[in-house]
Image 1 (cartoon, rainbow, N blue to C red):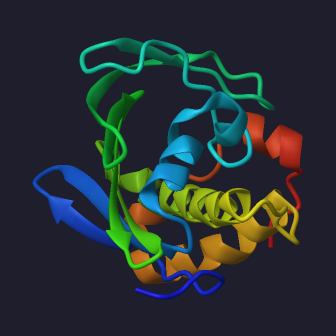
Image 2: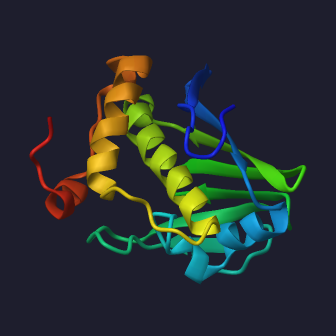
Length: 185
């Protein structure tokens, strides 16, 4: 695990037919502050790729809409909601699990992303990596010093290299390419 500003790459694990990526981040704020960034719409807007619409209660249906891309909203469900330590939801076909624990004056965030499609593991791992970097900036009241699409391309090279061709078979959605340009390196 690394400190803020030096995040490590998520670690890919195959569990049967599923691809699971594990991230661990130390954030300099207590779980209660990070929890607000995980659950409050105005905070989510600074780092999470979609809106989260629906009741924040176990079993509640959720809907996720992308803010800057013309992609149909997707459904989901709240699987666990234990403030301020555990948030787990079905995000389309994927499962996102955010676990927070105190660590001195800060906190440890463990994000586990479970995917049914192995070919998109590097793509999605890159996306969640960037989201976690943005989360760190949001909780510090700052703006990232990079353009998201440029940062995605830079980080994605590392995930493709680490995860290999089978986990890198599916690239960004066409809608993302339209918004962010297609001049990929």
